[in-house]
Length: 221
Image (cartoon, rainbow, N blue to C red; front, side, top):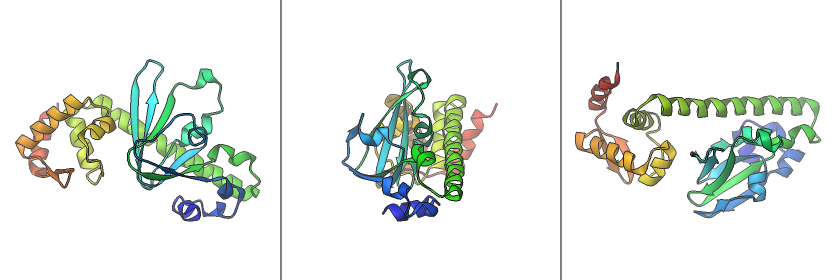
């Protein structure tokens, strides 16, 4: 499992090294919350099976949700900067399994001190840096969408970009979108009534793309 996952992450040069031996496998039950466990204190998290949700708490008391599905990797930047002093930790984070899941804890934070060949170590650090940048831009893009678009526009954008998302529960979707459940229900009810969306086997799908495109014109200023 670990070797296969490293290949999928394009880190096959780490197979058979001290890095692979330091990777740990966790089997999580649905609803299991990870507070101060070894997994939370470890490196980045790679989702082999299932879905996990990262809960970020801001100093002001706000909450922000990030969902990670099979094949996703999360917490790269938190892993790299977790050794900073408490004054630099602008957010706390918890992790919860939204369904039965298998995850790997990847010790990216310890690569520099590991006994790896210089070429392998440098190559790995570059790849981790690129992964961290990709993660940062994905989150930044999400935040831009959330701040620029209205609730209706944001839901439309999400349905268009993540149509194959496996989220079935409306409450879960509200958390993913960081929209109140009541606000999301109002938007979905309106879209159902307009015939833009449908619920197929528990999945919310776009039904009338042309109608949705026409409706989106009202947001153009």
